[in-house]
Amino acid sequence: MKKASIVFIVSMLWSGIAFAQLKPRPDAFPSEPENLEKRVITMATTVDEMASWDRYPTYNTYLTMMARWAETFPTLCHVDTIGTSIQGRLILSMYIAPLRPSGTSPETGEELEERPEFFYSSTIHGDEVTGYVMMLRLIDTLLTSYGISPELTDLMNRTRISINPLANPDGTYHNSDTTIRGAQRENADGIDLNRNFPNPFFPAKTTIPQENQAMIDYFTEHRFRLSANLHGGAEVMNYPWDSFTSRDNPHPEAEWWIDVCKRFVDTSRTYNNSHFRDTYTCGYTAGGDWYVISGGRQDYVNAVHNCLEMTMEISTQKTLSSDRLPEYWYFLAPSFINYIAEIHNLPQDVSINPTHDRELTLGPNPTTGIITVSGAEGATIELRDLQGRTILTQEASQSNTLNISHLNSGIYFLRIDGETIKIIKL
Ligand SMILES: [Zn+2]
Image (cartoon, rainbow, N blue to C red):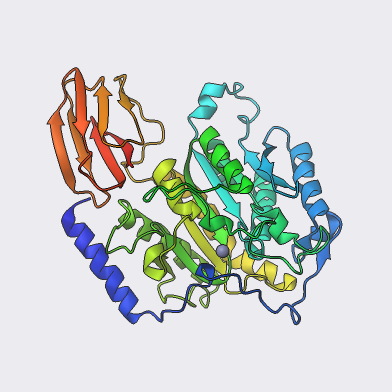
């Protein structure tokens, strides 16, 4: 990104902050449970009772719903187990990747590989449950629309979509499997999962909670290029980074993020103009401008897995009265679907399937200072920092050694022949 555009974004963000009504970030503080006494919390103890989408499922109803979709739509989807929680509950993901419609040749694994991978995940904070039901309804909408809605059919034919409705089941069903009353933010060990992913910028020895290790392995097995982590307690789109303010360290794709956030918020406001106004009038922010946190999933996934992930805070109340869930679906569903489609509109530097004739090898990465690059003959090697500033360029010969031991710890980008490789300097 050019310097001029960075200055423009920063000044825009700063003027946004100056005029916005800044509220403390509910997501940043120790759990403050909401008083649910006056809320209607109706539980669905059978799948049929979820028909109007105005209830929360019991844990067993949730499992049954996932299993039933997989049974009903075997050519469209299957259920992946990301892992298990401390108390042994399942962390599930619905993988939706239809085989080609009948009449065309069956798809090979290779062709499937060409479809970019998208990921939604909700309720890593166990008491922020709006997204849980929204994601279940999204799965249902996608699967039942295949072959009926041309737009959704096309989206599913071109995209591999994984949806994890519940990332912290022990938190949500803290009291019992049959109610979400008494849900807590943390996992069963009292750990805030969205503060305990590895910090890619300031690596430190930490114990990774079981639920997060499972999520890390899942990200490693897949090649997600766009994802979102759904929360509640505010209504604001929160794009990376969370670890820095946008003045200190803007995300290299900040301009793209702002466009995506605007489209999400504007679309939802055509359905209900009063939403996404409780934190910023524009409805979006760079995470660190709102509140700097460490160990969130968003920054880890962006920096380490080369996946553009944002945090969606989708309801002012963490736990909505269940009869309000349909209202939220009505105003959010088109934006959720459009956000999946953004994967076909990624910034140029984020390649989905890098194609290059070179056999590039590079290592070690992460590195303490000396990186060896081979297979880059004739190309220019360029190292940039997070702000997009060029730190080093050199013409590549057969074997190249880059010494970056003098640089601060953090993330850098090595550009070789149109390909961008993320370097972690320890
Ligand atoms: Zn949260």
